[in-house]
Image 1 (cartoon, protein in one colour):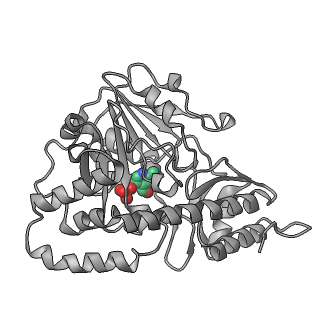
Image 2 (cartoon, rainbow, N blue to C red):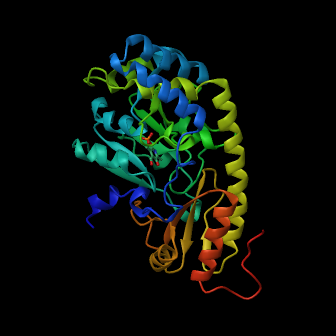
Image 3 (cartoon, rainbow, N blue to C red):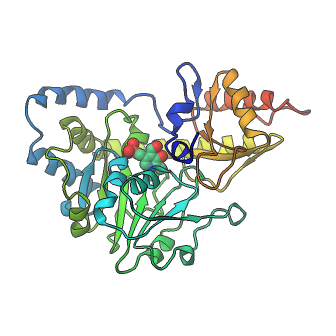
Length: 354
Ligand SMILES: Cc1ncc(COP(=O)(O)O)c(C=O)c1O
């Protein structure tokens, strides 16, 4: 595969039908029944164009959820649309913090924007030092928590990267999976900081395309300049409203707590296997592993019906890196057992706590 193809690689390619999927970081395999019902009810409204009122209702819902103004919100067809719109900001140099999700890299390069990588060091825990960002970068993109390292950067570090004349894009696609969202900047207007959020992961909605951006109204205006008329469909707008309601927020907060608990158990068990190192502390609903002969192990797992995400398509990582989603307890146990089998087992048990 070419470098460009590798950047375009996503976990859905690793997860073929029939495999137990640890490659894609979507929490559930379909939206919950109450959300499917909301979307089904909204089908009747497809006979009309999405109205300004529908769009405002979605922005109001997001604004209320994060304590911001409706003019500080733009609804997006997924966080990915936010990346695709970044060239509208006409950056002269974009600094992309890696290892991280590669879509911003692809979108900016495709638009001819000069890009530089800020490569974080595993020996330093992939810690982000604001001094590592080149002074001349007028656009900075980072993930928080970061895919695939599961690292959560302190909000203070992000604030320190912001400065006049620079836009800092914080991809918070997984922030709703972090209990209490302690380092999120979604609720805090910081000049020049643009926060991207996704509904995809928490709500099992990758097929719908729903997310939003939060930031300064002027910056948002520049971001969406030239966008198609009716850029969002009625179902997306309905999902945004539904997922910001108090009952949905309570459900997602509970899911975040459960995922964090499941992640701690899974990290401990995987780390106990010989030849496996789990990067920590982890904050997202996935773990970055370093596994001896990782590429071979991934093939062997696949042959036993388990899909994990290859890590080498993320800049700075190699074939020994694998990413695994945190799933239900039963599925996690199967992953650990299968990994143990593939690695040849070891005396004294598997480290699995049943
Ligand atoms: C870190 C990260 N950001 C953004 C996205 C895209 O999210 P959305 O589905 O909202 O476009 C993904 C999808 O995999 C992701 O992993």
